[in-house]
Length: 204
View (tube, rainbow, N blue to C red):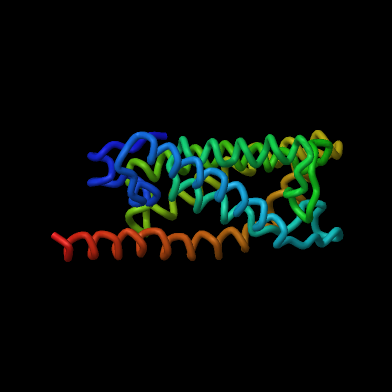
C-alpha cells in the first residue's frame, strides 16, 4: 500500500497518480481509497432491479464498478476494497444489492467473485492491461468470466439447479449488459491514460 517516488513518477495504475510524498501519506491515501471504493461499490449495488421471470439474480451496476475499481486501484487496493465490502456486508452492513446484508443468499457467490475479479483485473492493469482498447477488452472479459466462475456454480448449489439452468439464469441474461459495459470501459480507461500521458508530456 506504499507508493515510492519512482512509482509516482511512473504510475502503474491510475490511483498511483494521486500524490503521496511520504510513507505515512501513502498509507493514508490508500486507506481513503479503500474506504471510498467500498462505499462506491455499496452505492452501485443499490442501482439494481430483478426480473423474476428471467433470473433470480438482479441486474446491477456493481459489476462495472468492481472492474473499474480493479483497474484503477491495482490488485492490493482493489483486493482490500472488495474484502472490506464483502466482510462488512456479510457481518450486517446493508450495502449489498437493494440494501441487503449477510451471506445466506443464492447470489453470494457473485460477491466472492467480485473480490477475485477485482484482484485479477488490478493485476492485469498494473501490467498495462488498461492502456489500449484491445487490452482493456481482454481485461474486462477476464473479469466477467471470473465473476461468473464463482457466481454461477454457487447459484446452482444454492437453488438446486442443473449446470444449464444455472447458466441460463445466472449468466445468459446479463451478457448483453456486460457487452455495453465492456465497450464503455474500453473507451474510458485507455482514454483516461491518453489524457494523463498528454498532460504529463506537456508538463515536461
